[in-house]
Amino acid sequence: MLPLQQYLNELHAEYLALTEGEVAAYIPELAKADPAWFGISIVTVDGYAYDVGDSDRSFTIQSISKPIVYATALADHGRERVLRKVGAEPSGEAFNSISLDPRTGAPLNPMINAGAIATAGLVAGTGIAEQWRHVTSAMAAFFGREVAVDETVYRSESDTGYRNRAIAWMLKNFGIIDGDPMEVLENYFRQCSVQVTCRDLAFMAATFANNGVHPGTGKRAVDAEDVEAVLSIMATCGMYDYAGSWLYEVGLPAKSGVSGGIIAVMPGRFGIAVFSPPLDENGNSVRGLAVCRRISRDFKLHSFGSTASPSLVLGRVYSGADAPSRRVRSAETAARLQPLASRIRCLSLQGDVAFDGAEYVVRKLAEASAVASEFILDMNRVSFVSDSSARLLHEARRSLAHGGNALVFSRIRAATGVKEALRRTLGDDDRGFLTFEDNDLATEWCENRLLAARPHDCGAGATLRTLADFPLFAGLRDPALRRLQELVEVCEHRMGATILEAGAVDDDRVFFILEGEVSVLLTLADGTHQRIATLSRGMSFGEMVLLGQHARSASVYADQAVRAWTLPASALNRLARDYPDIMITVLRNLSADLAGKLRKANQLIGALAA
Figure 1 (cartoon, helix red, strand yellow):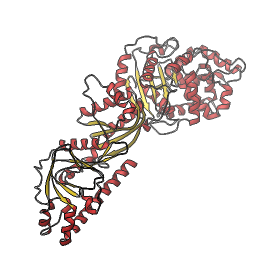
Figure 2 (figure 1 turned 90 degrees about the horizontal axis):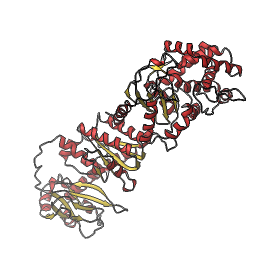
Figure 3 (figure 1 turned 180 degrees about the vertical axis):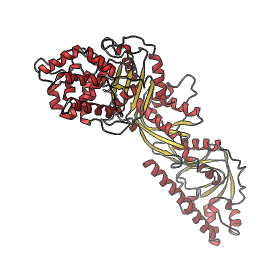
Figure 4 (figure 1 turned 90 degrees about the vertical axis):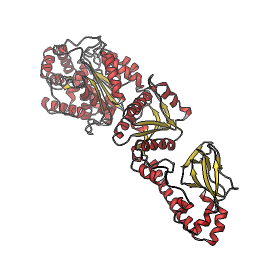
């Protein structure tokens, strides 16, 4: 289960116990709603839907239809004409108040009933039937499906809508509505009676969040310019006389309806919808308000904070086949690892990782887990991780571990506080997380896991009898090989010893490892080290002296106790005067080795630059 889904499940269970509020009774059909109905849906701008509870239960949209119809009117006539008929100022009054501009008679905004009835009359069409088809087409674009009217609720609203009839006639009196105001009003009753689900409303909100494009169908429902206008009205007027407190507490453009729905829009990120019929004194869903407050607080979603697309959190993604570790494996082990390496995935994160950014990363991990089992989160470019984001990453790590997979971190910079956030959010029963100094070490750890999971009995390896058993002298034959073997000496180094030091010029030996492991390191400008390679039995180092390079270019350290043959380059050069096959063999093998390293370097550059 994805972490956000688990979060919504827990949120739903917590607020299911909240029983305050009363179901709307002024429309008889709405009074039949079950107060226990409760659903939450979140849809991301890339179309992923999270649902819990009664998210598929059908109910009528009511006032949440108003942003769609207002967007339709803007598209049909433009802002200037619409603003002459319907204002953009908060009323500070109830949704069914008679709030008109005392000079022009225009409703103060399109989110109160007076403004919504006027807006319904502004929808383009040669007659009331054509206007209605236009409205249903607009709604279908926001929901990603065709819509239908709940005829029972529609008749109930029409039969009891006396106050709205008075408002419609008053709008006609001021010249706000052209034609028969009762026909316009019936379309308004119909739009409020359209059947929706909590998930439909989340897709509607996500369409606004996605700059007017439906995340599921990919079709534009509203122009980007009109999205800006609608969200501005929703932010200041969408919650009636609670709008100011909502914007202060939650900070998201929103709209509520008396059937118990609430939508909230996080521009560029996702849409939230909550359905729960019991309402407060302002006509807003009690559970809906509580859930939205909680989500905004937990995940720091307030619009006046910094916002960015969650996908920007994820930079490069590459596999262990694209960028293997610098541990040099034996030919047999390398052959075993080669088909497995693509199961390693390194995801480079960047910037501030907020809740929705972490959610996006976690989904990408879940998608990749079908073909990968070892994951590295490169945190080098991360400047901040919120506690809620850290919890999501931990939940993903634990979920992967439960399935036998692994998630590790690398390159966490000390000054960012990222490690502290990860430590602070560990669960009581969590054994902790693994982090590495660099991606190379993390990749090697993942490679070792893959190899260990597929054991292969290869014994102690081939016996190292002569220098010809090492790649540098592969193919060399007697008598040159026998004479060369007479020149070697045995050296031993304890674990942790420095075998070669970068810049040294007084040692021209080439080393051939018989037992143990060494690491070849470069010292960087900031004093840290970068591993070039880790070498083991059957491998050699220091060969560049054979090409006339006197100063050592890197340092070599014994990771384990090391036993090796050594061969001075000066002695080899003297012997090569009598046995030219030696240098021919060395140059051929060195060229092949350098060509292979160049191919790997180009492959790595390509992976990191992608």
